[in-house]
Image (cartoon, rainbow over all chains, first blue to last red):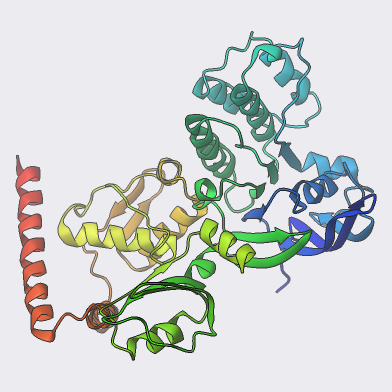
Length: 297
Length: 137
């Protein structure tokens, strides 16, 4: 059985701005139909990576492939199959929302007018409004409509909801799930970078944590939440000295002990249990907590 | 039906949905023949991947708990206990074992644990009676 061509394949990608290396030897693969999250601190290389996919930057070493194609050599074909919402949305200020959408639609071979109308209504956007008079949230909404209507197989979102109010952020994510994914659920691929990890938690199948241009972890969300545990124990006296090498972090607070574990959860729980704690609880880390734990340890 | 997802439980999201629908069926909150929410609005409301909800529904379908009627959606099956008896017992034993381990960690003595189980059975019976009472009105 041959596996399908990955939606995105990045191999040994290197990109530097002058002497500042933004991406160093990045490798990752996104299968079609998946939602892949790219997490990292500011300057970790997320936007640079996305720009290489869009042929806004050319890799200096390594290669990127979108549906098996090189974005530099097959720019039109690659752009036909993806849509992009950047963190800073810019339109021609003299165009209305209507003119902007018509203009963007003119570059596309397909444009779903019905979806466009539904989303304009959902976002309560006035088609006659000039884009220079739109709020930041409304500009992002217009960009999202323009990204969804062509019904591409890949949606690239770069910090799409940063700086937006909570209602607009919610609507944005609901629209990605509803209007975008619904069309052809098995094949609609999402590649999203965000700092608002909690809001995207339910959407993300798999994620990479970038640090200084490298992927320090690539994990499936469900598996990650199974592996990363926060274990809390309270003892009658101050906690005994234990061998807790398997723990990522150890925090002692009076009679209490809090451990962060990556994979070694069951062994650590067993170790603590042998010292008869008064209470012993385990919970999974959320993706945001995993992100913080990974970069702090 | 109102779902409550918990990302800290360590249980895959689709399995949380599966369990909650099974629990709703067991408690009478969802009755045979009643419709489940459609995939798209439920995914939007919970803000989870559409494929996660679809996976939960297809799991429930293969377990024989729900059925999909073409063009009409998913419904709780009239006879949803299609799981063979030993399979059902095995599923239950796993859950009971987990509760026993948890009771041990929380230092709940055996006798108190057994009393608690009795209490929970009675509480669920009450809940089922209330649900049936409301639907009868």
